Length: 435
Image (cartoon, rainbow, N blue to C red):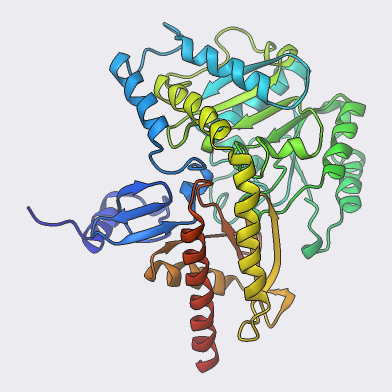
């Protein structure tokens, strides 16, 4: 039997799969365990991407695999809307207790983060009888039509796909690097009410407490409290998108916990089910009950395999104290980035920011934060892959490197990966100087 190669599979991929499904690296996975991936040629990689924040509990965590296999022995699918099952209810009960706030909650399960966002907007409009939605620049909420409308970044997510659903408005997300203060952002909301839509027609405001694709920009507790007060003042529902930030990534179960506020709804996905497709909308029961029977759901929504995996994920987070681990992991990564920033051979390390193990660094030119270096970020992702590291870039300026390794990664592999980055940046710097 002929051995598969990355080159051959890449050629087949280009012929069989549309280019709109972008692939960052021409590396085809064959197996994975915890924070390591091996490609079809047997090369090993340290995973600093985590399937874009999906594998907080690591690849193929034994407890999660056992739970899924046990469920598979019983049944793989019945459709909850036809013949329901206990795991859906048990998981809903757990999430209702875990999300912030004392108000009684209810949970709807779906398959993807974009579906969760879509349904949160549906529920908000049904509950309020209003149509307007406010989102933030730099935010990412999915690739469905409403998801794209809410997303505050044109390239590559929105180009050529319009027109988008109406009554969606954007205001600037606080970002000191781009000269936007929290006061500026709040004023923009007031200006929106004065010039575009009256608050009595706004159903909901949606925000990521830490922007994912936008560059890991962090909304401060004070800012989130101000939004909560603003929404309360005008009868607007506050939806917090915790799809990338949830399930111990930031050092708490949810990033919203830092602010001490109670959202009206939260959208959840990614690490909820440890790699199995599952998403959720958890919200105040009075709001969640607004949609009429049959108005919510989906054929695969709340997959039995996903629910079984998610119940195991919640046990792993508690048993392995992953919130505590997240804080230690974030500190370790930040320490290495700080050492790089102090290296006189490097002039490309800009702002370092983190909330727990949700860590980002801005790559810049000549130590100048006003000069973003997106070409360096792109080159770094490719360069470290040669040395066995999978890394992600992001940001509205395309110059941010983000760290989303499994929270279960051993320290030794973190150090190995950070050393690869440090060495690669020096190598790229020499290439740049030679040019």
